[in-house]
Length: 562
Image (cartoon, rainbow, N blue to C red):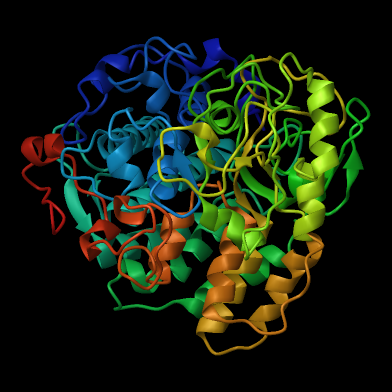
């Protein structure tokens, strides 16, 4: 089998010349119109590359989408829509385009950030269809059987994001001609297409866990399709407007994954360079998570990142850099953007009384990193002390004096120090090795990992009246060295989703499933744009279709309320 990722250095990803198409992309009628020569494997590398890169060069220049290239990547655009409006974090730069509207849940049909995500997903679907059209004659080849199924999986992934974020999609597949306008596929119809498509490709993909290896890590095998199918099934009631529930199906797919070749990352390891011990959980989000066999065993499907080969401002770099300010110890990067910080409600998932240990005194002028580390340890505001105080290995926060004194709650939003710092994402190797680049991280994004199968099965069982779902939650709490739960309530479940998966780009989806995103059932700081939070209208459950697409595609209709 030929290895796709052997070709994914920058030059290997960028041979298609499709940028001119993307610059005009309104999702409506645009398809590749060039006849630029390419090789199938280069095209396949480009299809995979759009998961973690933003254009033809990286980190900037010749972007796929005609907007700020750093803002246009698949993971950054979808992460922002799934995370920034929720109880997990705030974006300090409130003067940035559309940020007050996104963080306060007050966007409208002209939202730039919803358009960027919509365009990115549309462009990635376009590439998938283009690949499938141009390799149709090779469908019987043993290798191409895998390749084509992998591309169909990626297309299903993008259509899932359309379904989750907009409750509809501008739909085309490889059977449509270039001149066909996408049709609108809404709710139940899109859910059923995804259900059928995933079922069809599961037997066409490589067996579950086959690509969980150093040579093919990052390719989609059947395990990735099972996890996406389980996620789809868990949300079936939401996606079909109550017409369908599929908890048994979600449980069935999770059973396969949990009994399969994967394992939770559970072994503590000490970094020989800085002397810090990192839990198995922490190692999932570190720079060598593609070489650490324990972390790899949990990661079902990653977005590959390399500081030299895939430099960009949109994926791991966004996560690592946005949560750090200059002066924080163990930064692991020279890129400290001072952007995303924790809303108090996230901290309270680990410290219900808000009693997280925090520094109260500034560092003396001219303090070195080593001196700040010592001072933080004395008042217990360093990450290691916070982990001990939380009794939970997932409480990866920093409340020390590095970069300035932090607050738990704030009456404003435009200062990075208005909240506790999140240090879950790291550009540090647990083995003590040197990262590829001081600015662009090597950290792969675990888009699907085994812990999701445990939480999905726990919730599906709970919703089906099966009390044994608590056991799956406690497997994860045991891995985190947290006290086991003795009962499992709705609040326990939604809180545990947050504790396990905060800052992984899914919180909005979970809150909607629990009917907690819009109304007054659950308010959090700055929900609705006010300090204590307030209910917002139910139409904000889904994002607006960009007006460019409404104007350019007669088949698309606007979501209610916009």
